Amino acid sequence: MMKSPMASRRAKKTEKPWDPLWHLPISPDDFIGYVPTPVPVVRRMLELAEIRRGETVYDLGCGDGRILIRAVEDYGARGVGIDIDGDRLDIARWRARRHLRRIDFRRQNLFRANLRSADVVMIYLLPQLNEKLLPQLDRLRAGVRIISHSFELPGVVPDKTARRTIPGGLTHYIFFYRTPLRRA
Image 1 (cartoon, rainbow, N blue to C red):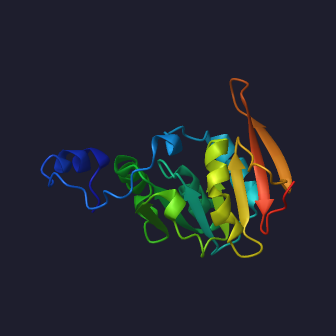
Image 2 (tube, rainbow, N blue to C red):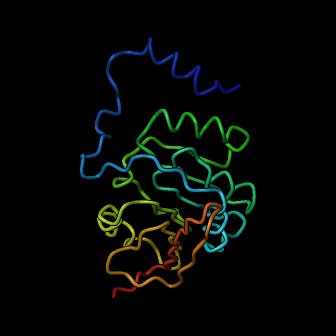
């Protein structure tokens, strides 16, 4: 049985003072932070991705795992969540505990992640981070779908653009790309 995220935090007080993943921290320029994607936007992103049963969805900066949980529950996908924040991953694993056979959460720097098995890549990153991610996205095999919440891939023409207005009136933009990426 999986421990709750709070139990996990209590256990960390007794851990060794070193972190075997010391190489993971990203530079201050690459700091992403955590801003959760509203559920109506998650649903629209997944619709736009055209996910088919058994495909593998990567979520770069997966936060609490909400996108991958929906992809597994609603589309029968497999998921890989990449995040550098161990506490956030504890929460994601706790939330996805019924689906851990289908979702792999990895504590990793997303700029070093191997995306080779991705059918769909979900991102919600600032424009300068999207730009830094472009070399990895360019190496993806043909036909991989990339869904970016709020920010376009700099210099790349989206195949589709959608928007979702959530309660309160805030409009979120979603950009769909298919590899190979088309440069502007």
